[in-house]
Every structure is written in structure tokens, then in C-alpha cells.
Image (cartoon, rainbow, N blue to C red; front, side, top):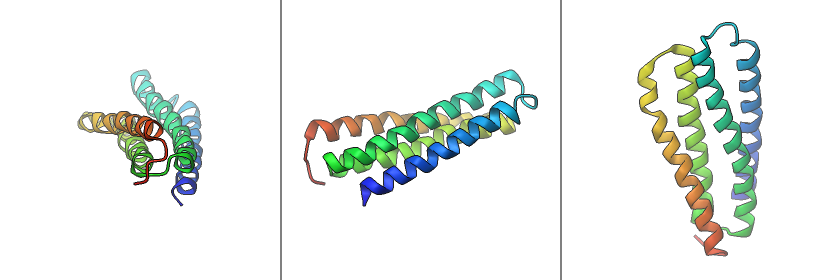
Length: 127
């Protein structure tokens, strides 16, 4: 179940990331200041990269099932939501206070990579 779940969520988040990128490139290009558009694009970049990482998490859950592999997926989902989501909102609304939560999402992404590495290191650890 975990492998399939993370693969499905990864594919759906990749779809949303591509749509967000197209939205930024076409609809926002003339509406946002260049610095706000750059913030939006950083959100899209990390969103797409970690959506693909979720596909890897799906695979990892078939190879090294356990808590660490599952945790990495949940951390990537939280990281995309908090990191990219806060950047999207910051770019679209200009509310600088949103930048305060962006690092929380970044930490989720970082710890997600560590959890994935731990899952691979531990091999077939059961969680």
C-alpha cells in the first residue's frame, strides 16, 4: 500500500507542479514583478523535484519497507506543501510573513532525504 500510495501522490503532485509551472510562465509572467516570479519559480522547481522523489519513495518502499521509507514520503509531501506552498502564496500575495514558515518545509525536505538514505542503508528493516 505505501509504495502505490507514494507513487500515486508523486504522480499527482508532478501533474500539479507542471500545471503551476505553466501557470507561472504564462499567466503570471505579465502580472508579477520579476522578483515575485522568481520566488514562484523556486517553489515550482522544488515542487517538481520532490514529486519525482516521491516516485523514488514508492520504489524504495518495495525494496526497503519500513518506517524510514514511509517517513521519507510523508516528509516530502509535507515539505512540498509547506515549502513550495508558502513560496507560491508569498509570490501571489506579497505577504512576507509567509516566508517565516518556508524553512520548516525546507527542513522537512532535508530530513526526508536523510530518512530515504537511512532506509537504503538499513536495507530490509521492517518498521
